[in-house]
View 1 (cartoon, one colour):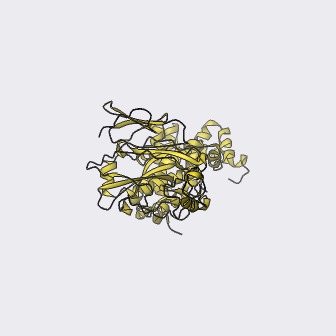
View 2 (cartoon, chains in turn brown, purple):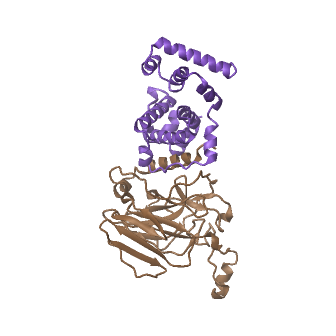
Amino acid sequence: MTRLPELEAQLLEAARALDGTRRRWWRIALLGGGTTLALAATAVGAVRLLLPEGDPVPPAPHASVPKLDRGSTRVLSLRAEDPEGGPPWGLAITRNADGRLYCAQVGRVQAGELGVIGRDGTFNDDGRFHPLSPGANQSGTCGAWPPDGDLRMSTDEPPIPASGFTGGFLSAAGGCRENVPASTIPPQTRRKLRDVPVCQAASLRVVKYGFAGRDAVTIRYAGRTLHADPAQSGAYLFVLRPRKRPLTLTITYKDGTVCRSSYPSRVPPLPCPR
Amino acid sequence: MPTDAELLQGDARRFAAFYRRHEDAVLRFFLKRTRSAELAADLTAETFARALEGRRRFDAAHGVASAWLFGIARNVLSRSLERGRVEDDVRRRLGMQPLALDDEALARIDELSDARALRALSALPADQAQAVRGRVIDEHDYEELARRLECSESVVRQRVSRGLRALRTELGGDR
């Protein structure tokens, strides 16, 4: 172990990012003229020990996900701490083969790589860090790549396990399922789910992420405010334990425009500018 | 075992190996000069960030990698002293976050310091301590030191010599 493992991990991540910036589309669309990758995100916490690495997460075939260009995956420098600690959460995007579409993927990050922790039924709870194979998008959150590279995306999804695994719990990676009363599940499905553990309430996370666009100034969610980085198309990522009341996302733009959305819907939405 | 030059020309994991190989030496370098584990960590982070950014420019024909690295370290230190704050330009450019140091990390850095020797140095008469510090820790040559201390080179040599002799006596005669 080094004396400053956090510095070693940051250097490794920065070195990977430097190697990754060679791809032309990424430089043009998200970095601009030598703009910094830094994003005013959650500060890095105490010294973090690296988890041992396990097998990569197998790709999940999704009918709704286009064929992705495996080499185009880029992990943004944006990070969000998990309420329990451990590797932070991050956000990656991958473009499809012809570059017209892109998909976003969240997960836990270690040494600059997006992946999944073996817990919550995933990878037999081995406690290891399992990198997501390049292009192995599990969430299916995709959008059209705008000609000017200014991304806009908003997601509203149910809580996911702290493992960071967003794929199906019947996949080879395993996972846990929602705690749904057995009486509401058809007998055939119930048999399939017999060996699938139920997600513990304490392990669930609301993971709110998206892109507010280059003109966004601040993004506020569940009482937390993030200062948007135009170089990353106003990417945002919030991770918190589930709350009983609906949570509202509020984005403020340079020209003073404010847009707002709530999930589950509570306040009337204010549409975001395009 | 790969050479430093090979590590610098390699991928991200190889640069991490370069960091591990030189971490102690760079931390010790800054610890001696600042006597603060926090400052040493901060300066070390900026030094390696610069080394990372400039690693492809390293040319083994012009010298060994450790000399190149300590050249960066000296530059980071002098610019930080000039500005009155630790340089962080390159870390910001690379998207690196400020280090959060807990007590354990600070203790691991402090292990590198020779606290006894530093205490003995502080106990020397001021003129000798200044001369020894300038020559041994800050690595100024005698001409530079004479200018800084506003005395002749022979006086500086005498102060350094006497100071080192006193330190050897104090620390057991083996240093």
